[in-house]
Length: 327
Ligand SMILES: [Zn+2]
Image (tube, rainbow, N blue to C red):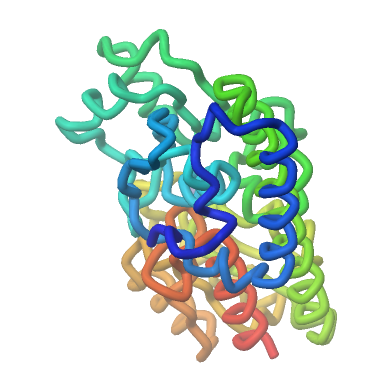
């Protein structure tokens, strides 16, 4: 959903505005953002494309293509109406086993900035770029330079499920890259970035308190794929099992049996499946381990329908479901 009725988002790409005028407008926008905060951002995600702005100022918005809907939502919140953001992967679809579609190369070719995560999450992008389109387009790889958690010898790419990593790494990188490509928008990106960081910090504090209300012994995660090491570290969960080590590769009967034994021995209270995958394995594991609580609708790599249609909405929805099932 595009926020073209809210004052902070209507800051147009006006290259003729005097600096003083710009300063006043952005101060007002910042105040409004502070007031409306999370409510504004809560409905900013979902669609994979927002329509181009046709402001009277004339300068066209920056065309940004991201690999996933999560990154699209974050970039859109920092860029406001100075950017038009499209995600290559649609909502509800995961990146690790994504098969590019015929139109994807064309979308890359028209982009002015490509935003990906790296660290193995969205390697399909490299294949698309090798196939000829968009090789010279500016890139932003959000995971560059973030210390990784290694699991089974592989660095895990799911940094964004720890909001503090988004605040510390993703947001400054996005703001800086947009400013580099569109210096006239520096003030907009700074104001929007600060407002979004504030909304994220408020949400993070609230979610930390929610998790903190759980007895420590209950804070155990059994999840479908390996998306939660950073979330677990940040919020204080122990990861006791992952059903699928490599996306697209189901566990063998022996692997599942050993996971059932491990889960039983830890006393985990729930099994968490994910909306982007079939719930069958999570339900099987739970049944065999004697666990009655199965959540099948966590979101992580891709946004979904409301309330998981924005990055902030997804975080809240996931943590509320996790805490509800572990209580
Ligand atoms: Zn993933």
